[in-house]
Image 1 (cartoon, helix red, strand yellow):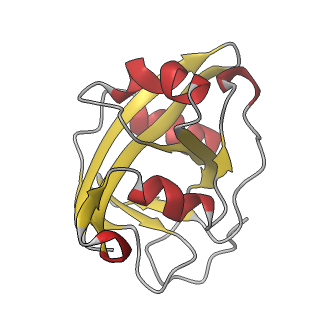
Image 2 (cartoon, helix red, strand yellow; image 1 turned 30 degrees about the vertical axis):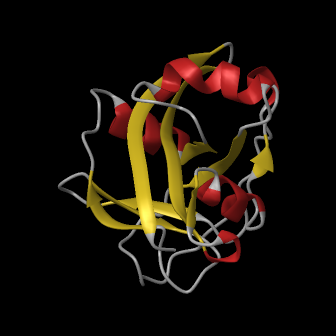
Length: 154
C-alpha cells in the first residue's frame, strides 16, 4: 500500500491494567475513485486481515490475531507482520515511551489500534473513534526472536 502511514506507541491503561499499544492510521490514493485520497485505507485493509471492528474499549477480544506478530529489536525498532507478503512495519525506529517495552514483554503481546481521524494524540481519541465506528483492534503476540526465526507464534 503506498500512501502515508502514522504510527505511535503508547502505554494504555484500562480496568484490566496497562497495555503496550501501537496506534496507527494510514491513507492512500484510491485508484477506483480517480486517485483521490482515502483517509481510512489502512483501517479498511486491516479489517480484511483479521483485526476486529472495535466499538467498546472495555471489552477487547483477548485472543491473539492469527497471522499477526510483532518483534522489537534490541534498539527498539519495531517489525509488525500481518497476513500479507510484506510486513506492515519493518524495523521502524519508534519513540517508545517509558515502560512500553517492559509491558509488551510481560504481556507477550501488543494491542494494535488502527483507525482514522485519530490526529496527533491517538490515545486520547480512541474512545471517540470506537463510538463512531472508526477503530479496529487486535492483540498481537510479541515474537521472542528476530523475523525469520523459527519460534512458535500464537
